[in-house]
Each structure stands twice: as C-alpha cells, then as structure tokens.
Image (tube, rainbow, N blue to C red; front, side):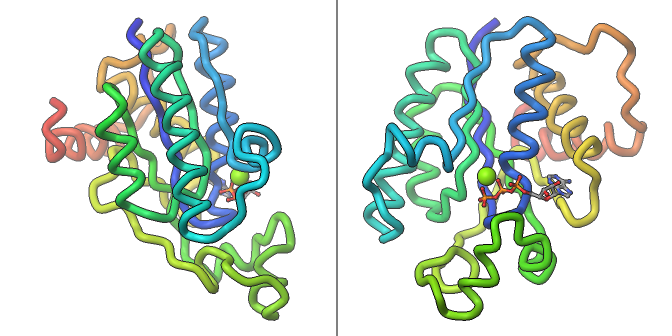
Length: 200
Ligand SMILES: Nc1ncnc2c1ncn2[C@@H]1O[C@H](COP(=O)(O)OP(=O)(O)OP(=O)(O)O)[C@@H](O)[C@H]1O
Ligand SMILES: [Mg+2]
C-alpha cells in the first residue's frame, strides 16, 4: 500500500485525539504501519519549548507536517491530531505531502466548553490563560476538508466508521474483511463529497 497522511484539525475537545486513536487501532488491526503524532505528546519532545504565539503554533504544525511527509512517503500511515488553527500552514503541509487527507472535527464552542476534558475552557473563559484557541485565539475553519465530522451529532463509532469508509473509497486502504455495515445514505454522502472534491 502507498502511505498517506491523515490530518485531524479542530478546536480543543472537538475529538481529534479520540478519533485518531480509534482509527490507528483499526488500521493496525488491518496490518498497516501507523504512527500517531498527537499535539499533546509532540509538544513534550519534537516541539518542546514551543509556545502558543502564532509563530510557535506555525512552527509546531510545520514540524509535525514534516515528519508526516517523511513517514508517508515511506509507505506508512501518518496520523496527526493537532488543533492546527491556521489555514495557510495546513495548506502548506497539504502541498508538501503527496497523499494528504484532512479531517475537520467540528462542534459548537458551547458543546466543547461543556466537555472541557482538560479543564482548559474553564480557565480560558475565566481569563486565567490567554491565547486559547476558540476563546482568545483564532481558529480558521477548513474550507474543503476531505472528511467533515460533526462530533456533537455523531458517536465516536459513527465518526470512526465514516473516516475508515472514506479512506476505503479513496483507495488508500483495502476494504474491510467483512461487508461494510455503512448505511446507503451515509455511503452516498461520502461519495458525493469525494466527487465534489474531484477524487472519484
Ligand atoms: N463523534 C465524536 N468524535 C470524537 N470525540 C467525541 C465524539 N463525540 C463525543 N466525543 C468526546 O469528545 C471528547 C474529545 O476529547 P479529545 O481529547 O479527543 O479532543 P481533542 O480534539 O484531542 O482536544 P485537544 O485539542 O484539547 O487535544 C472526548 O471525551 C470524546 O469522548
Ligand atoms: Mg488531543
């Protein structure tokens, strides 16, 4: 199989890490080589010392993109899960990586502030931390993501299935061993999206 990069972008708590881990598990079960680059972990090593200014955020995303490029050009699946708030840098990575699939994990800020997995929204809304994406720092929405996940309307399993099915239809991963259990309506939605983007 050819390698590719699956890039999750979205506001804090939208579900990037959750979905990236689930997709990784499924691809590993199918015998593929998969590496996950999660924003939180990467900031402890590859991007240690970088902060949350625009410049540092851009450097963070460029570095993750660079590693994804190296991995995916060598036949691995690189899965990135990072807020990646700026469109220009995401597009730069897209241009540098031969097979790049963007997943926009979307949900309204009110829902995300309620989830508040790490307690950061509370702090940001109270003004205790600055430069928090979605509250006091910008997030530029993707205009044409290959995959759109509305995580306030879908379960984790629904969203995971949509991602896997899209990768199958794009020919990036082999089909499931068993018959796809995807509903015909959802299947049609995935195909329409990929047709609009010119993939099929
Ligand atoms: N359809 C869905 N997809 C993903 N997560 C979902 C979905 N529905 C509900 N959730 C929940 O939303 C939360 C998302 O948390 P997660 O840590 O994955 O977010 P994140 O985007 O990685 O945030 P951060 O940018 O802070 O790392 C989890 O508690 C998850 O169970
Ligand atoms: Mg995360």
